[in-house]
Image 1: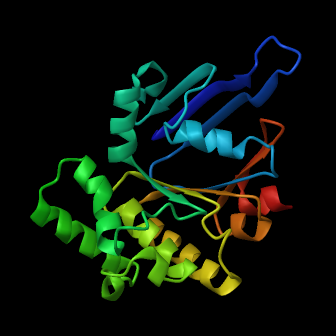
Image 2 (image 1 turned 120 degrees about the vertical axis):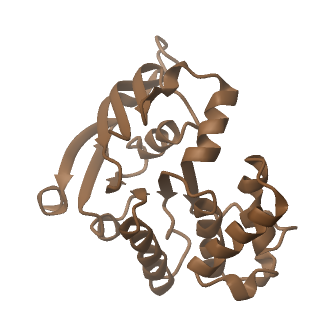
Length: 231
């Protein structure tokens, strides 16, 4: 089991009148190599769940085991190390650094891993080739379209060869044609063995995954094959 969360709660202002249970007793297991969509409306808890799955936050209660390690017991530094080595993030807003060109943006997580220049350049270029952005490797974000920036963001996410790719509304800022191309890249990565977790509020995007987990009010209300959940 790659991801195993058991009875996870994320509670804000616990015990106060303003208490919010962003996650309310969530169980979720993901096998290595799965492609899973997590769907829910605004306020359903899906972004909170992604933050916990991505080791960006820890639960108030419950256990999260990632590839055999109970991450709820780790320090901030240990969590950062796991994020950098095990997880590639793709966000709706791209999160590219404006002053850096495409290749420099893709190399950033490799620098954090302490990878030397020669190997770093090679891995970054391979990742850019994978998303058909090698010919624009010296362009800065302001010189690229939204779809091109998202492809660079995907290259950055996969350059470290992470076990998990987490995509949070990756098509949200794109037109439908460009969004389809981004989804095609994600499915291609999955076919090559990556575990992909796609966070979305859009049923049609969620339906591109074989397995769908639906959240509502911090709870998992459905988890199963696409045909069952979408019905």
